[in-house]
Image (cartoon, rainbow, N blue to C red; front, side, top):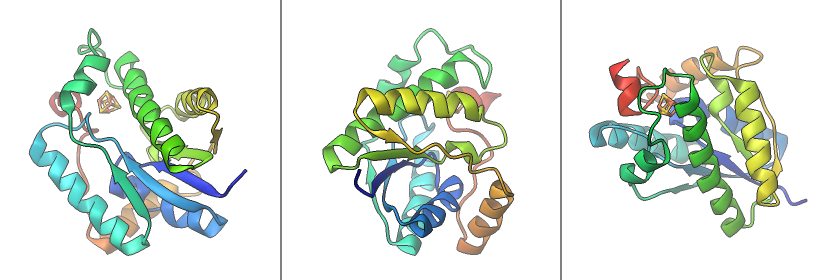
Length: 179
Ligand code: SF4
């Protein structure tokens, strides 16, 4: 197993703890930002700006997908009215992990992880089980982490503040914006 790890980054503030912690663990970290779930475009740009700041601060490489919200809307079609945390979110995680796993394969990263488990609002068991399943389908090793442990979320708030990172007040999609 090589030490190359692709880190799925849901947003810069949530990555502000996982990136340095994984680097300290000795991984060669490459970030991956999906972003097609983010609405509207102005919000996407704010999140990308924050990501650029974090990349500059940590020195990691990061792959950013071309913004194509239509692709994401197709993936969650029929689940628009699900509550946050329901089946739409599961599909959303899967879409992001599938895109990330393809990037990991292309970039020669044998390990795959996500920043999503730093959020106190997310189902970490579901996230890690979906990640493990999708990683396995692509011959990758899922690095299961629960970043919110050991005050991870509070640390991310502090680090984001120190770096001046934009922190959003909704998860990202148009449906979470309205919630
Ligand atoms: S609420 Fe968040 S996780 Fe759920 S579908 Fe929207 S963007 Fe994805």
